Amino acid sequence: MRLAGRRPLAHTRSMITGAHVLLYSKDPEADRTFFCDVLSFRSVDAGDGWLIFALPPAELALHPSMDNFVQAHAEHQLLGAILYLMCDDLDGVVKTLKSKNVSCTEIETAEWGIKTTVKLPSGGEIGLYQPTHLTALNPV
Image 1 (cartoon, rainbow, N blue to C red):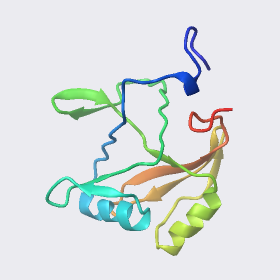
Image 2: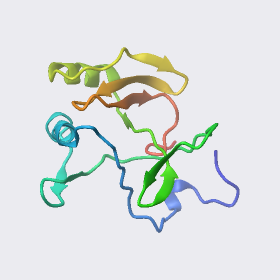
Image 3: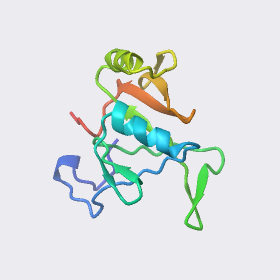
Image 4: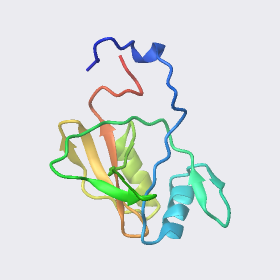
């Protein structure tokens, strides 16, 4: 979908230079280790072992909500979010994760791709999927 009056993605410049995603965890140290050791995400130490990870290229989708899906942060009610990591070979990634003793749910097919969830050491889960839809990362 293209909004009227908007230039194609390849020709636009944005005033925004990046995005910072917050995940809330019951065991952030274990989950930080997972992102570092299992997923091999690069990171910087912001002090006292507080790691901030570089993410792969990302895209943002705005979905409708029936109620207020929010997270209180910095005295404001910010929009809630769901994290899905994207890949080109879901079966291969799941096999690699399983070889590292990481459990994933059964792979399912959705209208937008094939998907699973990845269980983090804290017990929380994140999504992982191979898109079958056009993405902003690889527009036609």
